[in-house]
Image 1 (cartoon, helix red, strand yellow):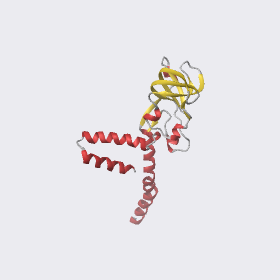
Image 2: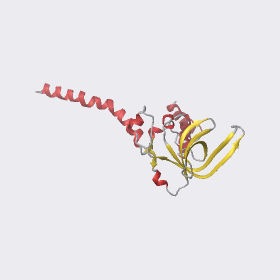
Image 3: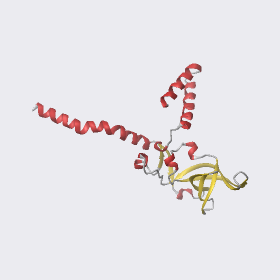
Image 4: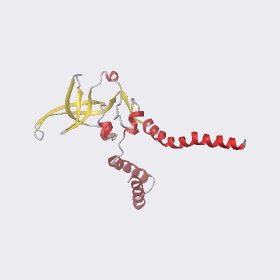
Length: 199
C-alpha cells in the first residue's frame, strides 16, 4: 500500500509539478511584460472637439511620420516631422512595434510649411503638445508580446531596453543614490556595479 502511494505521489509530481517549474518562468515573463501598462489607447470618438492629427511611423529620408489624417479631417498620405513629445523618444518602443501599423494621435498647436534648401523640397512640421495611440494596438506577429499583448494598451513588453534607455535609467538611479547619501567614490562604485549588471 505504501509503495502504491509513493508511486502515485511520484507520478503526480512528475506530471504536475515538473511542468509547473518549467512553465512558470515563461508564463511569469509573459504576464510581467503584458500586465504593466505604460499607456492606454483611445478611440477616435473620444477626440471630438480636439485639435489633432493622425499619423503612422514611417522613417524615410528627412521624415519620421506619415500623415494619415490632417487637422481638417482630410485623409492624406504626406510625410512630416513633429516638434514636441515623440512616442518613440518618451517610451523607447521596440522596432517591431515601430514597423507595425499603429496609428498615433498628436495634439497640435501649430503647423509649419517651408521650403528646405537641404532637402530641395517643401517640408511639413507640426508643433505638438502630446500624443496618444489609437485603438487597437498592433504588434509584429512573430513576438510573444503580440500573441498575448493587449490591444488596449502599450505595455512593458513593447519597450526597447537598449543603451539609450539604460543611460536614462542609470541617471535616475544615480539621483536616487545621491538622495540616499551615496556620494563621491561610493556613488561611482554603486553606479558602476548597476551598469555591469546590464552589460
